[in-house]
Length: 126
Image (cartoon, rainbow, N blue to C red; front, side, top):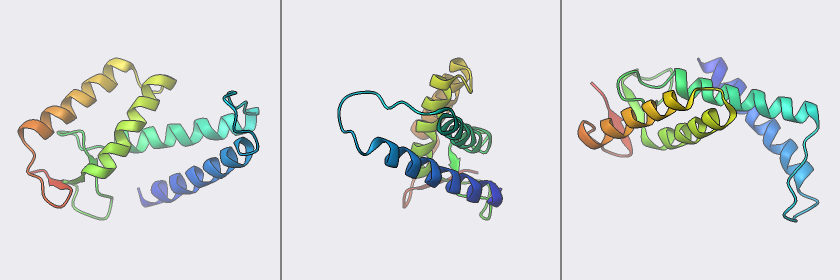
């Protein structure tokens, strides 16, 4: 999974830089029009982000795991917030059915409200 994390980080940086450069000259309220290659890159980055947070999320809690090189039951709340934003993208772009996104969010919130012991912004699951 480390290769996925590195590739995802690289794609995010490229997409962000591309969007900033193309959107920067005009600060009006007009929507930004993207050419097909830029739109394809943005879609690839969004799909990769959704895959990482949706497929690699903890199976019981739905929380985002700290990483691939730590214990699989160690999750983080900051990464989970980022994962929630990716779930919104997943639902809006049709990458994941809305019902599945709603179920994941309910699982996550139910876990946090009933079972999680928190310390230093990390929630051990076990």
